Amino acid sequence: MKPVRVQLVGNAVEEFEKLNKVVGEEQAGGIQNSERQQLLKSIKQKIEMIKSNPQYGAPVPKALVKRSGYPVDNLWAADLVGYWRMLYTLKGSQIEILCFILEIIDHKRYDKIFGYKKK
Image (cartoon, rainbow, N blue to C red; front, side):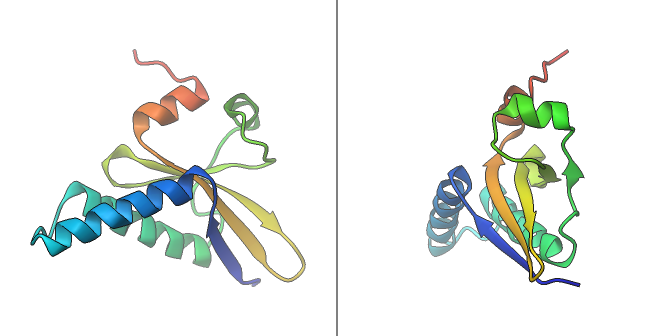
């Protein structure tokens, strides 16, 4: 099996760094378990799962990929704690598989990107 390299790009980098900073501040202040800490832990767990199985998440249908505006051929969604989602794409070569995490988003933004409406 080819090695899998995971890289955060774009909005995912900003969201991850912001979350990491807040969690660090919470832990320094004595908070040991919060929603943000659970979300950060969930992101790290999903990254490890993707490294062992790049197709871990649910594939996003091609029609929705086009609607989303992401300039990718394939898009995957991994469920995170608290109804958050991690969107990623895969690129392969003969040597390795690259996983680019594009977004770490809440459910409301996820619904907006893909045109889902509340009932």
